[in-house]
Length: 145
Image (cartoon, rainbow, N blue to C red):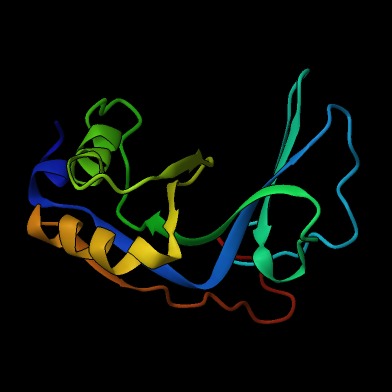
């Protein structure tokens, strides 16, 4: 494991409730899907999945909710095969369900809202830091890098 992993990682906890919605293959992104701290569409040959704010997801849709999203705020070395295991092991041992999603920049861990505080405490016990997400703002005409 990298030196960063052995010292502990930092996770940012996002405030809004999230949902993971299952759609059929080739589905368009529905109008009710709203952007939030994480908004993701994954399309495969067998399904389309949307991660979005749960507030507008129709009750008749096939979905799982509500989740609290945690993003790894530490820099992650893609060559470090132990990062995900290090984050999942405390949750598995505490029997906390988790939905994992990766982006180019980070790892997202979605846990049931009812278990978010417990997940945070399990990570802290393992030497990780968990804190509230700080919104990133950009000035007009400036891009985020």
